[in-house]
Picture (cartoon, rainbow, N blue to C red):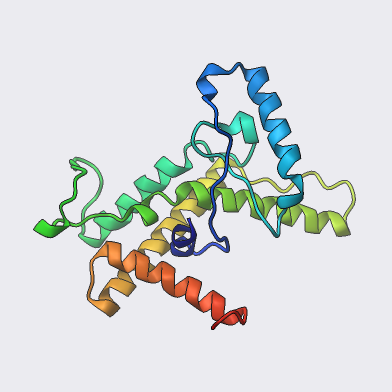
Length: 203
Protein backbone atom coordinates (compact mmCIF):
# COMPACT_ATOMS: atom_id res chain seq x y z
CA UNK A 1 0.00 0.00 0.00
CA UNK A 2 2.80 2.44 0.80
CA UNK A 3 4.27 2.23 -2.70
CA UNK A 4 0.83 2.27 -4.33
CA UNK A 5 -0.24 5.46 -2.53
CA UNK A 6 3.12 7.04 -3.37
CA UNK A 7 2.73 6.16 -7.07
CA UNK A 8 -0.79 7.63 -6.94
CA UNK A 9 0.77 10.75 -5.33
CA UNK A 10 -1.65 10.84 -2.44
CA UNK A 11 -0.46 11.62 1.11
CA UNK A 12 -1.03 8.23 2.72
CA UNK A 13 1.23 5.54 4.04
CA UNK A 14 -0.07 2.05 3.82
CA UNK A 15 -1.51 -0.61 6.06
CA UNK A 16 -4.20 -3.26 6.04
CA UNK A 17 -6.45 -4.46 8.81
CA UNK A 18 -9.75 -6.19 9.16
CA UNK A 19 -11.90 -8.84 10.76
CA UNK A 20 -11.46 -12.57 10.24
CA UNK A 21 -14.92 -13.69 9.14
CA UNK A 22 -16.88 -14.81 6.08
CA UNK A 23 -19.10 -11.82 5.24
CA UNK A 24 -21.20 -13.90 2.85
CA UNK A 25 -22.34 -16.06 5.77
CA UNK A 26 -23.56 -13.08 7.84
CA UNK A 27 -26.86 -11.25 7.61
CA UNK A 28 -26.85 -7.52 6.92
CA UNK A 29 -27.74 -6.80 10.56
CA UNK A 30 -24.88 -9.05 11.77
CA UNK A 31 -22.48 -7.25 9.42
CA UNK A 32 -23.70 -3.90 10.72
CA UNK A 33 -23.18 -4.93 14.36
CA UNK A 34 -19.74 -6.36 13.56
CA UNK A 35 -18.72 -3.16 11.75
CA UNK A 36 -19.96 -0.98 14.62
CA UNK A 37 -18.09 -3.00 17.26
CA UNK A 38 -14.91 -3.03 15.15
CA UNK A 39 -15.15 0.75 14.70
CA UNK A 40 -15.64 1.25 18.45
CA UNK A 41 -12.58 -0.90 19.19
CA UNK A 42 -10.30 1.00 16.80
CA UNK A 43 -11.83 4.42 17.54
CA UNK A 44 -8.72 5.74 19.30
CA UNK A 45 -6.49 4.62 16.41
CA UNK A 46 -8.36 6.28 13.55
CA UNK A 47 -8.86 9.88 12.50
CA UNK A 48 -8.26 12.29 9.65
CA UNK A 49 -4.58 12.71 10.57
CA UNK A 50 -3.78 9.18 11.74
CA UNK A 51 -5.45 6.20 10.06
CA UNK A 52 -8.29 6.36 7.57
CA UNK A 53 -10.25 3.09 7.16
CA UNK A 54 -11.48 2.31 3.67
CA UNK A 55 -13.51 -0.49 2.08
CA UNK A 56 -11.64 -3.52 0.81
CA UNK A 57 -12.15 -7.28 0.39
CA UNK A 58 -15.48 -8.48 1.69
CA UNK A 59 -16.90 -5.01 2.32
CA UNK A 60 -19.15 -2.70 0.37
CA UNK A 61 -20.27 0.93 0.49
CA UNK A 62 -23.11 0.02 2.86
CA UNK A 63 -20.58 -1.23 5.44
CA UNK A 64 -18.38 1.86 5.44
CA UNK A 65 -20.27 4.52 3.53
CA UNK A 66 -17.96 6.70 1.50
CA UNK A 67 -17.63 8.66 -1.67
CA UNK A 68 -19.87 8.32 -4.67
CA UNK A 69 -18.12 6.16 -7.26
CA UNK A 70 -16.01 4.31 -4.67
CA UNK A 71 -17.58 0.92 -5.36
CA UNK A 72 -16.39 0.93 -8.99
CA UNK A 73 -13.24 3.02 -8.46
CA UNK A 74 -10.66 0.22 -8.58
CA UNK A 75 -12.03 -1.11 -11.87
CA UNK A 76 -12.48 2.37 -13.28
CA UNK A 77 -8.88 3.15 -12.30
CA UNK A 78 -7.72 0.10 -14.28
CA UNK A 79 -9.71 1.40 -17.27
CA UNK A 80 -8.13 4.86 -17.02
CA UNK A 81 -4.66 3.32 -16.54
CA UNK A 82 -5.16 1.17 -19.64
CA UNK A 83 -6.36 4.17 -21.65
CA UNK A 84 -3.26 6.12 -20.58
CA UNK A 85 -1.00 3.24 -21.64
CA UNK A 86 -2.72 2.87 -25.02
CA UNK A 87 -2.55 6.63 -25.64
CA UNK A 88 1.23 6.35 -25.26
CA UNK A 89 1.16 4.01 -28.29
CA UNK A 90 -1.37 6.06 -30.26
CA UNK A 91 -4.18 3.54 -29.74
CA UNK A 92 -7.63 3.60 -28.16
CA UNK A 93 -9.26 0.93 -26.04
CA UNK A 94 -11.90 0.18 -28.67
CA UNK A 95 -11.39 -3.18 -30.40
CA UNK A 96 -8.33 -4.09 -28.29
CA UNK A 97 -7.82 -7.56 -26.83
CA UNK A 98 -5.92 -8.14 -23.61
CA UNK A 99 -4.08 -11.13 -22.21
CA UNK A 100 -3.02 -11.01 -18.57
CA UNK A 101 0.14 -13.09 -18.11
CA UNK A 102 3.75 -12.57 -17.11
CA UNK A 103 5.06 -11.51 -20.50
CA UNK A 104 7.66 -8.82 -19.80
CA UNK A 105 10.54 -11.18 -20.59
CA UNK A 106 9.14 -11.47 -24.11
CA UNK A 107 9.10 -7.70 -24.55
CA UNK A 108 5.36 -7.35 -23.96
CA UNK A 109 4.35 -4.18 -22.12
CA UNK A 110 2.90 -4.92 -18.68
CA UNK A 111 0.84 -2.33 -16.82
CA UNK A 112 2.08 -2.44 -13.19
CA UNK A 113 -0.48 -3.48 -10.59
CA UNK A 114 0.63 -0.93 -7.99
CA UNK A 115 -0.28 1.79 -10.45
CA UNK A 116 -3.25 0.23 -12.26
CA UNK A 117 -5.27 -0.75 -9.18
CA UNK A 118 -4.71 2.49 -7.26
CA UNK A 119 -8.13 3.84 -8.29
CA UNK A 120 -9.84 2.57 -5.14
CA UNK A 121 -7.43 4.17 -2.68
CA UNK A 122 -7.41 7.35 -4.78
CA UNK A 123 -11.18 7.70 -4.49
CA UNK A 124 -10.89 6.96 -0.76
CA UNK A 125 -8.47 9.90 -0.65
CA UNK A 126 -11.06 12.05 -2.44
CA UNK A 127 -13.55 11.09 0.27
CA UNK A 128 -11.03 12.17 2.92
CA UNK A 129 -10.50 15.50 1.10
CA UNK A 130 -14.26 16.11 1.03
CA UNK A 131 -14.66 15.25 4.73
CA UNK A 132 -11.64 17.34 5.72
CA UNK A 133 -12.83 20.30 3.64
CA UNK A 134 -16.25 20.07 5.23
CA UNK A 135 -14.68 20.01 8.71
CA UNK A 136 -12.58 23.10 7.92
CA UNK A 137 -15.53 25.00 6.47
CA UNK A 138 -17.64 24.04 9.48
CA UNK A 139 -15.19 25.84 11.73
CA UNK A 140 -15.99 29.06 9.88
CA UNK A 141 -19.59 28.59 8.78
CA UNK A 142 -22.25 26.92 10.89
CA UNK A 143 -24.91 24.65 9.37
CA UNK A 144 -22.94 23.94 6.20
CA UNK A 145 -24.85 21.71 3.79
CA UNK A 146 -22.04 19.28 2.99
CA UNK A 147 -19.11 19.38 0.63
CA UNK A 148 -19.72 16.23 -1.40
CA UNK A 149 -18.67 15.73 -5.00
CA UNK A 150 -21.11 14.14 -7.40
CA UNK A 151 -20.06 10.91 -9.14
CA UNK A 152 -19.17 12.72 -12.36
CA UNK A 153 -16.69 14.93 -10.46
CA UNK A 154 -15.21 11.88 -8.66
CA UNK A 155 -14.71 10.02 -11.96
CA UNK A 156 -13.22 13.08 -13.68
CA UNK A 157 -10.74 13.61 -10.82
CA UNK A 158 -9.87 9.91 -10.81
CA UNK A 159 -9.11 10.04 -14.54
CA UNK A 160 -6.89 13.10 -13.95
CA UNK A 161 -4.95 11.31 -11.20
CA UNK A 162 -4.56 8.08 -13.17
CA UNK A 163 -3.43 9.91 -16.32
CA UNK A 164 -0.96 12.06 -14.38
CA UNK A 165 0.28 8.94 -12.55
CA UNK A 166 1.02 7.26 -15.87
CA UNK A 167 2.97 10.29 -17.09
CA UNK A 168 5.01 10.41 -13.86
CA UNK A 169 5.73 6.68 -14.11
CA UNK A 170 6.70 6.99 -17.79
CA UNK A 171 9.10 9.85 -17.00
CA UNK A 172 10.78 7.64 -14.38
CA UNK A 173 11.10 4.85 -16.98
CA UNK A 174 12.79 7.20 -19.43
CA UNK A 175 15.13 8.60 -16.76
CA UNK A 176 16.24 5.12 -15.63
CA UNK A 177 15.81 3.18 -18.89
CA UNK A 178 13.56 0.61 -17.25
CA UNK A 179 10.20 -1.07 -17.80
CA UNK A 180 6.93 0.27 -16.40
CA UNK A 181 6.93 -1.99 -13.34
CA UNK A 182 10.41 -0.90 -12.26
CA UNK A 183 9.46 2.69 -13.10
CA UNK A 184 6.40 2.48 -10.85
CA UNK A 185 8.37 1.08 -7.91
CA UNK A 186 11.18 3.59 -8.43
CA UNK A 187 8.63 6.42 -8.47
CA UNK A 188 6.96 5.16 -5.29
CA UNK A 189 10.19 4.54 -3.38
CA UNK A 190 11.61 7.94 -4.43
CA UNK A 191 8.48 9.75 -3.24
CA UNK A 192 8.52 7.96 0.12
CA UNK A 193 12.26 8.64 0.51
CA UNK A 194 11.74 12.34 -0.24
CA UNK A 195 8.83 12.59 2.22
CA UNK A 196 10.99 10.86 4.85
CA UNK A 197 13.82 13.36 4.36
CA UNK A 198 11.45 16.35 4.40
CA UNK A 199 10.03 15.15 7.73
CA UNK A 200 13.54 14.95 9.15
CA UNK A 201 13.46 11.17 9.55
CA UNK A 202 16.55 10.41 7.47
CA UNK A 203 19.22 8.23 9.10
